Image 1 (cartoon, one colour):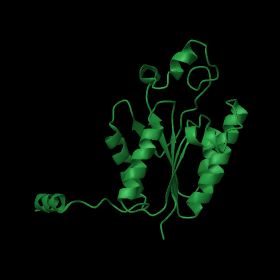
Image 2: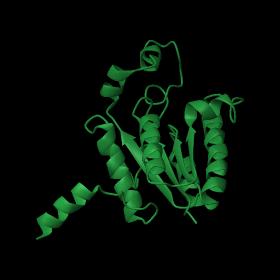
Image 3: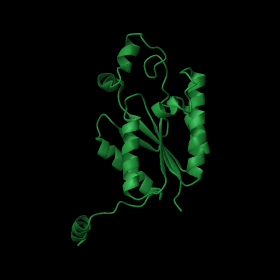
Length: 193
């Protein structure tokens, strides 16, 4: 039976959490993992937590509910990816304590780069005062103190960051190693000789 785990992506808006979660999910599917679930902040807020706003209490409740779902999935053999800003350390620590095989991935990207990227125009609105309580501008983001993985999404490609995450999952024994093509295996054998 498959070992359940949670890969929890945390970072500021537009730092690449969802993009990486989708990339990791595709790789897990390609490796034949039978049970995979992706929980995403934007999607979850449409259904599971649509009654919540963006106060600290509501953000904590949002992560509390997601943690409950991730805990159930991971303890029942599901590979689960969670992509949430999850700005508060205490809420992330609670998720770590409750979820089976929890791996925290910090998607680091400098604020200046995120403001330049701004795919949804949210940073521009926050800086103009059109929206308030925006994480990283006028609401805090508590950086992870000891994340299991840090990816630098301003310097790494999606493929490079995905590979860092997959390698960690392999080292933890949570996923099988990638099947290498016969050509790659043959080249590797020649190098060993």
